[in-house]
Image 1: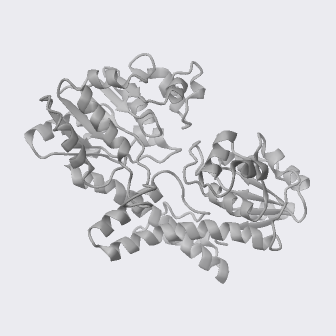
Image 2: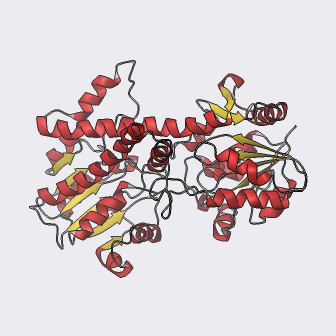
Image 3: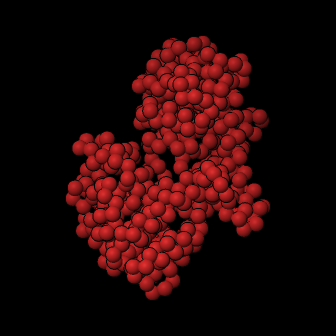
Length: 463
């Protein structure tokens, strides 16, 4: 089937950027992104393209080029489904907070709702593509719903997981390491796979487009994220040993990273990983392993999460201990709230949990992040449900300037590795702070020698 119309259900961090790139690279294909969130769609359609709801370097320019030509954002889900030959499902799959699998299994209610809506609306044959990160064999459930509509429409289900790193999503989409497409081994399934291959082949070399069965594709996504998170937790485990022995974790990482069998990526010690994928996907993997009775496998992967949680608690404990075992009524400046640089995504950000720990110790926190809005910061903290929203608002403020955040502060905690932090007037910041002026560099962004020369008491993770 030659694809001329695509619909994507879900205008979030995956659906929005992915469809923007497809539209830019395939001007002959009409791409419609739909979402029930009217405010989000309005933001994607804002005349000022800089106000689109997702910050990714280069994304606004691509949206500006394609929007209104062959890229459209709409809340009319039914119309987009009806017109499309190929439908991406890119909705949230959060970890369950109730019932069987609570705290580990993926909650597939949004996936199921999408499948039922497609089944209700579709009048002709469709290719349905899983873009969300899903448990193994989810495609089987989707197919069961779609094949029992009784209207005679034929559906082919493909798995096409995203391998995007937020902050570099545009580059990752334009120059992917690989495109993975899983489908049925039948003739119809292989035809559907080829239809999607032909879309990506407009800008991706076909030797980088891998085709597998559906189950291998679904599991590959979980496995990739688990391996990456494992590397971070591994180097973070070594960071605590480095601090006790006098080693420098950055030097250790550089030494082992030069081993061609290991490589240098994902070996930067920090306060811990965040984001929407790593923790959720590993917990999902743990749940799948337990459901098959593979308890040793489950325990192995769960330890990656345990280590990550420990690293966040250890960072906040270090702040308290260094500040003479009390931060009550002391001002702590947070530089960064996003879970990583070059994104406004805060999901599972280490900053949320460090702030929660410090507020429990009665600290006053001033937050500055160049891309995260004040409402989002407070929403993140309130979501933990540790204390009342009024209490959070009393103990945490979001300010528009790093200098305002640091003025009269007892300590600074660097929680996101924004490049601009290095360029600040650190002498001015030092002069505005309580003395001694402490810096806790949770992302190893700043230069120790330069900070200590100014007069800061500087501590980083792993040295």
